[in-house]
Image 1 (cartoon, rainbow, N blue to C red):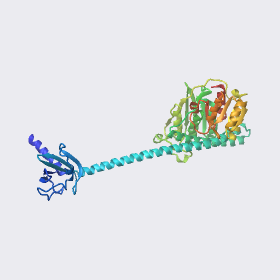
Image 2: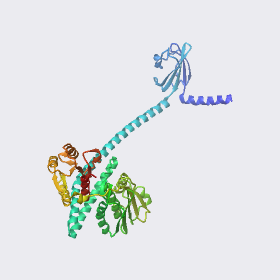
Image 3: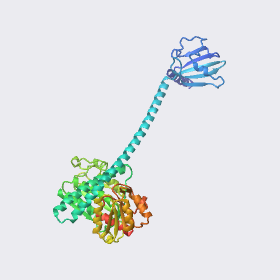
Image 4: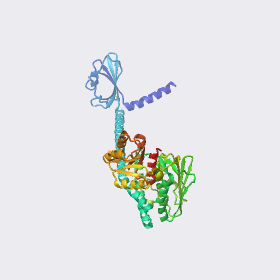
Length: 491
């Protein structure tokens, strides 16, 4: 057994010797050569003779501390005209022993590792820089989209509002059709703006849901009136079913629900060339259940995994109208409202999208036109078209209306007109609407105050005690009347 171990040891020693090419040097106490053993030629000691001084070839001996315990080791030493080596120094009887071990390959490998580590640090720093730039770009994109959303919403509020008014007040059928076309186009543009803004909010984790008491039937009927003509143009059977137990008023974000319906039903109409579209609403235990089914070409199984991705438009390129955000935004909105958007499709026999969201019933009471008769409302906005439109709605409901366009007029009217409710634009030119609301409270005004904005300012009513409600433009007639009625009644 001992002989076998000796053979193993000799094998390893030969292997190590080939790798490090050791050279052993014995020196006297004056650092003169006494003896050599090993690969002297590799280290440049081939012509050395006994008695030759070695200080010029081993200058590190000048730093030797004789009092220091041995062995002493210097790693990766670059000696004159020698390869990189490890130097081991051992004290002998009145002499010194030096061992030189080739470290060229190890040194090269270490340098490579250090270079890789350095490059990894550089890559990490570059990654952090790029992530910072991406985050900044996303914020700028979100801010830009929010600004553009405001610029679009303000004129669209007037286009949609006056389109509704013209359609509902005209007795001429052709005028009604033309007003309906204007209204559908305005709603289509608004939905595109909402989808783009919603995607920016999702990217920046700032998607908001602002629930309020609303007339569910009126909100859904508005979507039906916009989309039914599109289905009729394609000769599609268009069914819009309500369960009889659905309460008249529920607590949810009607604007977000309409956005989801416009996306889902609009897609169903767009992709269905013949057959039918069925939209069903059911309400059970404070949850609204919605189903949108069509007899279109369906969605192939391999497409279903990607259909909810942003900007994905499916395989039907000829139907590429839109930004490809509808399903992505709809799923995010449904999730934010406490539900989950599901897809059922065989890939050949149509598709069905279904979801349920939280929608508690709101107690009955006076609302809309009945609650507003004889009430006084102060409207503050620097857009005269919207002031005229809102005043038209409120006067038809029996309200006394006073319209102003700047903060100074608001403060004066609050004292002299003594309104039962105030609706103020968030960006009132010379003054921020929230600041103005605080000033009204400080002056003693105790009735309802609503802030109206075309931008996404978040849930103002939860962050600003002076404000009772936050509404987003464009706001329809029913939503406006119900909202002001809620302000006055204290709901």
